Length: 167
Image 1 (cartoon, rainbow, N blue to C red):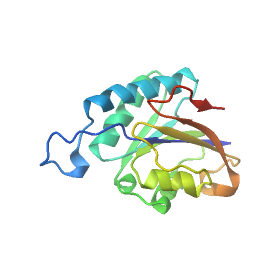
Image 2: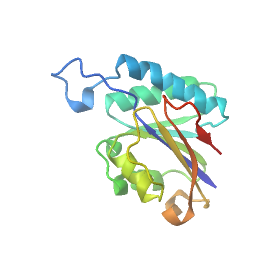
Image 3: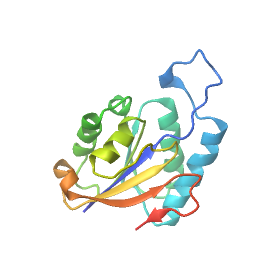
Image 4: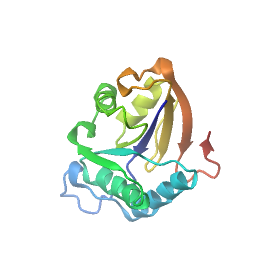
């Protein structure tokens, strides 16, 4: 079984209007929410074997908070431009190229691609909020075989959620 945790970057800052979208850092709220979510995931005994992040600054900063939270674990970390403004097919390509030795993969990136992916995998969601996490399990031993047919809902949580759904 493979487990995929889709992690949207935490809230980004718009304080410096001259920055490109790619270079926007986390806002104060993002720096508060990212550690909160990472700790919730860890409290539920969910540990990444690999983290793949968009190379946009706000996604990288969110992923780095998770890396720090899981610092005692042996986590493979990768950043890629392929997750920035990614379509469903772009995201699936990144995931499908992951090593089959990895069973629990966290990806960090952006909307609308992440919400589109969740809906593609047959879960109905209007919008994946900033700093939210949405998880699927897949009844397969190979990331290359990942599909909506072998996908099952695993978890959904976001910073303002008072009762996370984790199974």
